[in-house]
Length: 459
Image 1 (cartoon, rainbow, N blue to C red):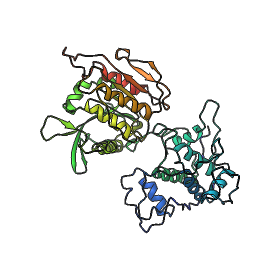
Image 2: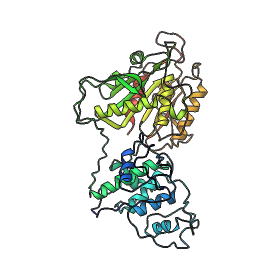
Image 3: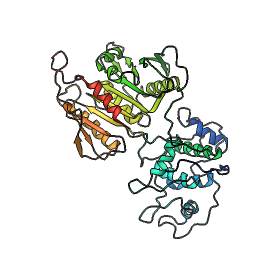
């Protein structure tokens, strides 16, 4: 694959489409918490985008194929040609016809095998990358026989730090915020006439920086103080990007208690930064939560706690952003599994035991190791199976599987999953705890080591 961007003249940005309607507002009120805020503002302040009539941008809204094609063509100042009647079977005299047919004539788009373009279909990330790479005249090699058609475009996004290949499924629908980021980053690359090396930069802002003299343990999220135990490697090197592991406790055990029985620090052996967050204690005492009773699955209260911890730790320490992991037991496993869906674009993999999950729209695929005892009465096996099946759908896996290690936990790995996002299911039969008591909801000996082995096995 070619890894360089050709030297060209600066690109004039003139985006104005049906997706962006005039507004007098200079700042969109709904992008404050968007990770693409800077790119959206860059394009807005330069007159590239303007938003909806109510002054909002709606960064999470989808965008269809016709709208995105028009945006990109206008962004590079392409001379729009009159539509050819034989352009596509489903494109004739609609508002987008000239843009779509010009893009076809320029070799930017090809449409589907049945002769249609699907202008009203939501554009997915791979399609958007293809349109951008071809429109901006970025050189690429055609995929080899054993590669998917989208691989050269996916590689462009990965190698240029636009979208990590681990954070989305190739057919995943794109949203307006992501597309603003894609255009903004590509324009910047072109204007700077940047030559890109073959190395993806997974290092966070904390790399090469002097770490805090002591690891902060308190976080303020929406006026509520939450805490966490942090374990920084003894030989911490600010030049080395470390994996980051979040370990969530259950309903009746504190973070200090699970630190003792998860036993993950010994197998990790200073090779990762570990965080043991503390859920909020219920007023009655003795029990903890990661959400409020009325929270929808897509907006559990402590998703924001996770976001705050991830940002603060990444800014203070050298973290490999492609190796952010989470694990948990019982309610902590439930929150871990739920987080794997809601923050699938940030978490590389999760491991859980004795838990289910709440379901919602997922932001990306996540590698999963899920252990559960069929005899567990505190969390039913059916809830765990439902969780597993959601993960299979999330990662586009088949129902076929093969036996894998650890064999003592009856583990199998499902086949056909999205690249490097396996789902491992372990219906273990360890019915007794370390004291010899019958307790199928337990944390079997060696579980922490098995979870870390799973994380380390991922590319």
